[in-house]
Length: 235
Image (cartoon, rainbow, N blue to C red; front, side, top):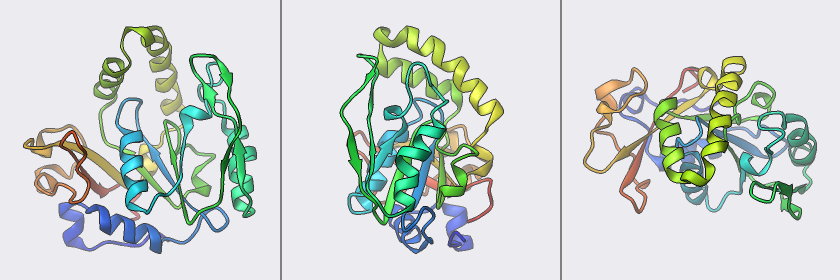
């Protein structure tokens, strides 16, 4: 069972150290590993947030689903992930996977992923139906699809325009068939220094959570996070 948080914290948002403490109290979900899923639309900031959370957890390993997906298997990689990564971790063994090189269009050398108290699984589809039984916690980056995709296109530039033209309809189909957000334990909202999060699109938490920027989670760009209870109702 996911640890509960107080009513006051529900109103104001979770600070990163509270989140870390709660994660460490959460029972293991994949053998002795607490597997945390960080899902959201492409371009929503999953990698950045997962990196910050991993750092706060003392250097927890992060598996990026961009390393698992391929051009031929944008979303049809579940079986490979279960075989190569989750099955070994569940058995207390080091997993080995070959990250995909998106420019060379081939798999690279194998990487090791040893079992750790906490492992983060980051990427679009981290909260999919087939993976949820293995997750201790599912976090969803609360950024509307169009806004996230626009940010992703701007980040990747003209070189990746054709990829994005194909990715967006594929992502739409995926979430239409296998949505993650309704099952999220927590919602993560990005804010900018000096900008009230109440002006951002997101959950019904609204302006009551707007002033509760997450202490200890400010990035070099001035970005902060709000971590709020999710639709799953587990917090």
